[in-house]
Image (cartoon, rainbow, N blue to C red; front, side, top):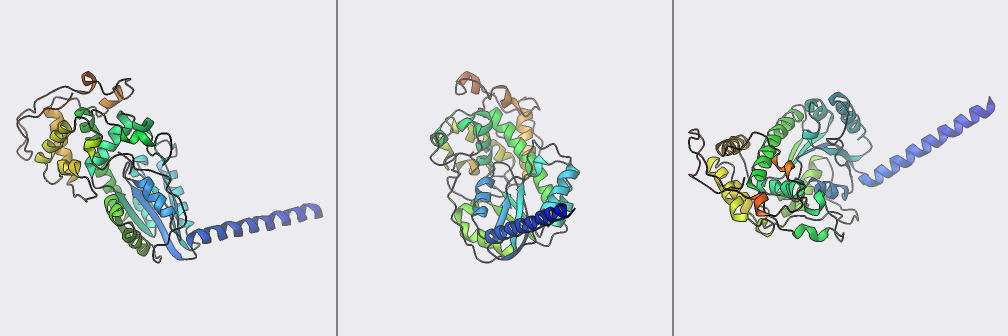
Amino acid sequence: MGVSLARALLLAVGLVAAQRQVRRHLEDARGGEHGTSMLGLKLASSGSTWWAHELKAQRGIVVEEELFTSTSHLSPKKREDKMVERLARCDGGGACGFTISPKNSPGVDWRRVGRAAGCVVAWERSNLAKTVVSIVRKRVLRVCGGKPNIHPGSKKADCANATAVFRVDDVEALLIEQLEWRVDFEAAVAEAVRDTPCFLRMRYEDFQRNETAELRRLRCALGLGAPDRKDRPVDVAKKTSDDLRDVIENYAEIEAYAAAVEAAAPACPLAAMLRSTGFETFECDVDAALAAARWERAAAGRPDDLTPWKAHANETHPREADVFSSARDVQSGAPAEVVLPGALLAPDHHDR
């Protein structure tokens, strides 16, 4: 009996010591500052991997990237419980939290999760055209083996320079998909911030132009001091050129399609986004752009199926003209609120 008691005491002492060690580790990572918890809602292919990397390089912030993915089999209720539990752990000083894509967790009560967070942060990339190009390169053309990110100095580092012919059908389908996701994303953000006093919207382009200022803005919202980096090497590299003419062989054709959508929905300057070679921020009326893109698809007589690219994503020779190109005329008869050009030729990114 005495031996069992002694063993139990030793285990208890060991557990306390381990807990203290973990607490010291977290305090060191958080820099001894007292902050709040962060719920980071983000969009796919928005540069969020780089964003999370830069947050991890900050003293005073502990962030877990992509808490749940689309492959998780947990029910929405169990995901909510785990997210709320994770946010409740942020009580040891500094700021901590996680990033998550709402599209990967349908059915979650984001109002409940947001209520548990000290601050809700929405991360997005405003250049919709570059987001779509990034996804086409990754999911259709399988640039860099379809990997979402590449590492500097790796054998795949040169693959980011690859150029290819883009099917307008693929661009259109993935544009519609992205617009639908953005509608759902904004709905999730609106729910998450209903009962939360702190809300911050951050954009990839702003972060690229002035990372220090954006980090200062975030740290202020989280109750932390000025930005202070830890020594952490950059382990992700940009996968798509800032000038999309470098990676799209049939750039004029894709630009013509983007211009058609922009003409129908001027409040979402898709063609201007495509032409951008810097980090301008863009505003987009997502609902108007979605209506215009859907009308373009219907006018072209293409099916409602938004996954045509899956049929040829594994083609051995994806650049062949007979696989990627055909022509069509834009049909007339669009509703009054949608203005379309008479005709256009159209064939039947990087995470950063």
